[in-house]
Length: 382
Image (tube, rainbow, N blue to C red; front, side):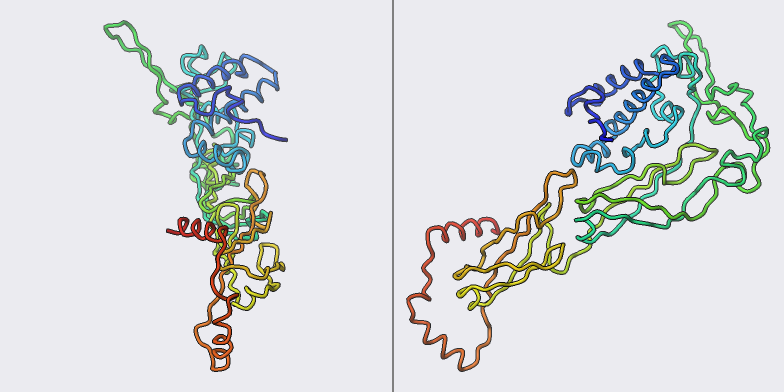
């Protein structure tokens, strides 16, 4: 299923300010809030979709990658991935300030119980993956083994073996928040803050799990498999949602951030989606013409060198470059012709060239087109 444009979801222009995006998201959050639309699955999906869009566009790094590469640049579900398994608590935890003063009450809901309790989030893990030009051209699947925190199997990540050992916090009564009323010159002022007794979680572990000591996570290795789309570039970062470190006590896992590195190709150079190959030919081949093989990402292909080909000419092989990461066509292979002038000659070779030296056909007589071409080349490399 094709994802909708995030700017379209929020109903904002691409150059909208951060404040305008926040206002647009608040409006959608109010409209589709699950407590306001009980049992309405369509409203719930729109609520998550709006959160996903705001998660990307409110983050400068994710927004820059999305503006340049679209959904492909984010990887995973969405770079933040609300549709990839986030719960309502995850959304309220990340964007809790958005719901303040919206008539939701202290728990972030209209009374339905979607709380403002703190939801733990695991840290992200960043790795670097090297790709060959062939892998970049075709896309590839990678499998990596990393050391990370993962959920405790003994207690199911809860921090306690038995659910009965997890108690509702007696201070905040499960809300995760405590309120304080103070008297000011303007009257009574009420402030809310995370509960000091439970750290904002709403629950406390009465009898910690012996394996994880009540944290809900243990250290171990995991093999992770993910797909890399074709056309990615050096320095691009993909996000595999939920594959970072697990969070304490069943919270939201962090993400695996995959930074792309390109391996150096022995013959080809990359310039955007185009590939460049320097082809050296002899004076004789340039003069008489010939047929040679050149490398591409799909193997070697034969090309024809026309008689009288000048050094510096560029032959363009259409669609023999790299695909665009967003699917907008494929680059070309540019074959840069360089005529190789021999440094050492034997006596017989010198005699042949001496006889040809006086030939009028061997004297430089560049056409107007040739002169214009070399002037352009001189400006390009100056």
